[in-house]
Length: 427
Image (cartoon, rainbow, N blue to C red):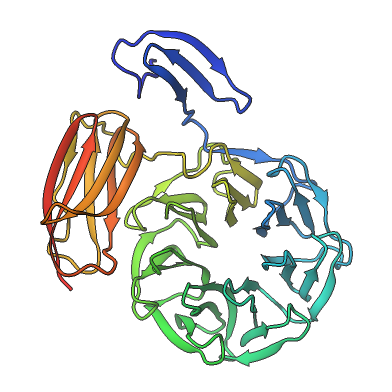
């Protein structure tokens, strides 16, 4: 079967070479092309002993930590692992890992909070004997938050001292996220039947207000993540929810095969959700596709996901730990198996719009694409896309920032083909 997608028609390949990364390079009259293997997304990593991975974390040096009823560390993206458990209780169940700006690691466990200040070589109890399911480090001030029964533990001195903030006797706090404004969101497990709640604090955790996420009876908000636009994503029981107004209201955006224990976002804003396998969205959560190729033990729960500075994603599951073969930012997703026969640019929807709109386009072959916004004077106001995109159907979400209401133009250019359409932004 030919694999010429991205090459010119009837193009002669004069040489082939496989580089150190296992990528196939094709030399042609028009330059060098790289063949991207789309059969497998994941490759398994060997961690001894092989067991269920509960939590993953990466420090600023790229060192990877995993809890598998102990803690292991890798300094080479998961190829070689070493034990990192001196000072920890034997067979300790560790639910979460978090690393602050100083590189100090915090582990939330059934026996409380443990801390390592020497890159994981040894550990000491920071807050013992508290069933701690989640640990989170605030980016702005380094404040450490830990979820426990009925409320939240907070430390502002690197875990030397902790203050307990009571929320509700019937909950366990099991997930955290914080935005660029310093607002904190806490997802909960409800001990008694009732609606799921997310607590929000806008004053660094001093006061908390519950927010109803859905009227449906389910018990856990397993994971929270916030993108660069401040949109919040919540993983729950067989569902993913999104808030675009700082947690005031929530909308269901995906039905999932099981609970969603982890949501992470790469530098392009692409979402990855761990459930029975891994789901990916490249359009702000409006549509999702499975990326399970190479993930052994399909049907096993993916408990944790983490992305390193290079855009490589790691998945911890009941079947072990896996790493993406390529970086998440280099993999182009085709939204449909039907290959378009031409270049097309669709009318944005909704139109008029506020606060965001979808712009869809189709490519008949892989091309370098630019998508730009102009005002009616012909002045460029924003570049939405400037990169190579694979053949297929694509969608971009545009949410204007600090622009006045009015008519704007959006223009798509690819392979010498250009099309322009109008849209109306109404505040």
